[in-house]
Amino acid sequence: MMMELYRQIADCNPNRKTVVLTLLEGEKAGEKALYTDGALQWESQSGGFFSHLEEDLSSLDATGIHTLGGCRVLCEFPAREQKLVICGGGHVSIPVIRMARMIGCSVTVLEDRPKFADNARRAGADRVLCESFEEGLAKIPGDADTFFVIVTRGHRYDQTCLGLIAEKPHAYIGMIGSRGRTAKVKEALRESGTDPRVLETVHTPIGLPIGAETPEEIGISIMAEIIQEKNKNRRRGGFTREILKGILDTSETETKKVLATIAARKGSAPREAGTKMLVYRDGRCVGTIGGGCLEADIFQKALRMMTEEHPSPVLYHADMTGRDAEDEGMVCGGLVDVLLEPLF
Image (cartoon, rainbow, N blue to C red; front, side, top):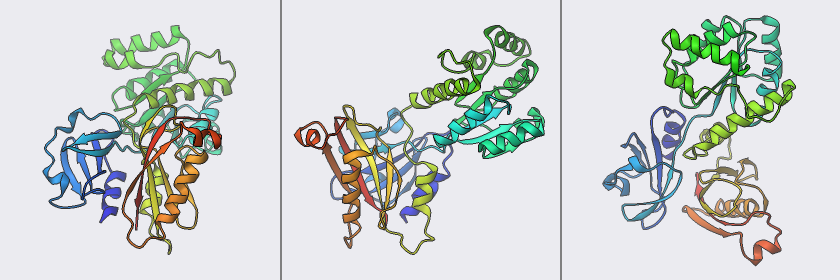
């Protein structure tokens, strides 16, 4: 039954506000529910804790532990994976493709020149559309997790791409070029009726101002800016494509798994609330909650949990500020609560 929750999370609409709730205390600890735009969509126990929850969830805006119905509840905001759409397959695109894949983004490249389209494929792009920018962008719906990068070979192509992208849902739009060139493109689009409020949000010139010169350096500045924008919104949960794939995969004969989730943190703990790690009984892991001694300890606790016949979810409290942390040589300090949930 719990697998249905994760299937719904995998299919959730990123343009709607979805929150996953887990009860952390009381007799009904471990119950879960999924709400979309404030309406209950799924609950693990019919008539349970969440059936009688009367709080307005609209004020929830961050992953972490909140008090609802007089009890502590872990609130998470799942989203689909971040998607990067690059208009143009020239020299700057290549390092952007490679770095985006490194941080887990899926990458689509639009390029009308076959040679450059092939270069994008070799660099690791998940999808390359070798056709006009108009035709390619017609196939990209956009959503709240789509980042658009415009790095074409000329301002007339930039204008075409920006005009079409401005009409789509998006998380970010960045356009390469000098201030003068990009200003002319945006002014032409304003005159043709493009929403000026969207144009004001376009990052031009694209990338953080680090004095980049080479294609590789420009690629770093672009990805740094995208990472900065992505991480401004801390509502995102840790339901990555790899985590959800691991949870939902029942093809293996050994299906015992434990899901570890950072529920709360204080101080300089390395990862944010919502970060997840999936532990298999055979010792494999998907994801990381920060590495080091904390992760090693959680890993061992997860393995022990899988030897129990009917384990219950456990909220583990780790103090990385005291003498034990110093003795272990922990670089980061702080307090961390990690929820361990058996998936069997």
